[in-house]
Length: 488
Image (cartoon, rainbow, N blue to C red; front, top):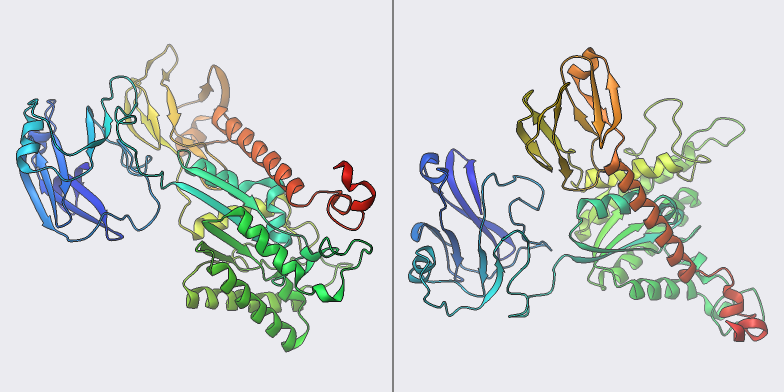
């Protein structure tokens, strides 16, 4: 539900996800009649056949759209903004209700007239908005499960494994959707391939006397991988295999990789999770005495192209890293040794993934007059400020935490020599010329909180890694368990 102008129509808008597609109706309404400082009753209904829109108890628009309510993707409703962030509602909202079924025209008219006649449809959501966001219907009827519960699992080799050390992508996704229930698990394994070779380690617990896996247990690592995926219960799988193709010898080696990759996809598809396939990044040339990566990059480029094609063929999302994840200057390094990404490399990788998935957005924007009046804001909640002896003040709360991976730094512009104070501390100070162009805000309590979140995520990843691959695994589960395993 929205008020505003679009497609040369100014008025009221109402839309729902029907049959997996967003369907909207509108009614042209003069701003002077709707935005007049008075309270108006607005209602939208859908009975499986017709969308209807009402203002002050009178039907103003109707559209035929047979189907069932289904947004087509996991989503949550937001009061006062689109997706809880964009297109903020400028006005007052009071006594919002959601019913289990469509109300009739007579029932809508009764509600608009504030009559006490009971409505037969059960009320499943009732926000009085009397100084709080409590849902008065919480204890009256069982609400549907929260559709925003997602389990995102990273699966792959060293590329994926290294992500847990920095947590840039996970932090960015967590900050982007603060009201969603997101769970992340990193199943990356150093030096692994599409066959799960590295995960076989010493073989199963049947191999209790030798460090070498028995020949009869070929494929054991692949079974371990599938057990790990099943235990993580993913709703989304981000798959990062393909780097091993850079070392595949000859055409037979590359064909073996292709066959193994398609078998892996077939198995993962059975989980019902959404798949996002990552291309392998290129190797960096460090110069002598490091080897020339030209041949490996030729193979990696071929693997990247092929993974993109197979993603399109099988209906999966694809993120291209080979040409996108490259140094921006001659002296910049994105890897530790030409092969494995460093801190900056993983930060740029997170930015690349989010940008190609269409998630990256601009940071908060605020326009404040010299009087302290807030003229415009987006991505934040801003209270009316005022003048001080040397400038203006206002209170700002961003809708989401800023992170370097997914949001551009906040920018502020001003006239004259200016200093920016946040919570009484000078954070930015520059000359008039620079302030007129806009100064990036790269420090502040929000960024401090985002970094604290990232550190917590890194620690969580460390704890999960100890569960996934305990350091004393041979004593707990494998061939030395008969010595000390009984003490574990």
